Length: 408
Image (tube, rainbow, N blue to C red; front, side):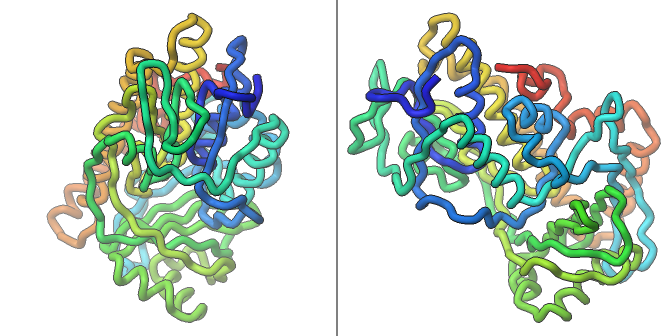
């Protein structure tokens, strides 16, 4: 398979972020297909990886990255999850009982998640793509899309494809050009992202405190570092991020709780605005959307990247199977198989995260009692906890082959 074909490519992927690159990598390794790919991105060529977010990588995603030749490049750079504690408290409370504790294994001792520094993940994906011979056209802005019965072209471009994939983020130019509408709203919340070191070792345990301002997550990273995803109202998040290092650390210690000991901030905080964006359709004739172009969810469940990579696994499988059967994989009939596979799952997760965020991001006494009772019931019901862990790990029924660690 050619990463970038001569003449007319079979598939053009717009967006060379995580999902765009991994889709190209998955299709370049698909058995017995022989498609030519074109990967373009509006941004200039990236320099040194600079994504300081910590990512939770679900067990199914780990299997996918192993199959695509990415995971071994992260050896020694990931932290296996030994478990997760979820609390519901106020920042001033010194004692924060865990209402829900999730064990770290899903099957045969396999952790249900690993955690990784975004810079390490970026570099591993870049290296895997380079090894596969994938080329990227940078500085390529999409101004429009033209489709006909047999192909799709980017406006002003002379390289029509049989399929165009929008992997170009929440403000997707492909989605806009295709006329696909979205539903969504701003949460009026910002996620403060940083990396810290704590006096007390984390031992692989993730902690999520549900606080009145929003969830405060500590994700374990190698070397006793912890990735922070700290949600507050937008104006509070901006104010907190501008504090001096000592005052910022003190505010974080109030929310982290005394059990982690003293905190050292090792990466400057950044604030990411939070909103819900859900495309009304994931496909159009000769066009498919993946990742944030199709859905952008609240980060409280840690599933954002994993959801995008589930899109990659499903779309790659649909395309490869259709190509092997001699079908027109850019036709709406084929693309709707991908949409049926992914859209219901996405809407479910979006609804769940929306409900959880609204239920927990407040300090109303009656609601606290109800939600704490609910968490406690889940914690005491082993079969229900198993379902929760299976969903989080990406092991739910009907998972694409890549998430099972099988080739496309």
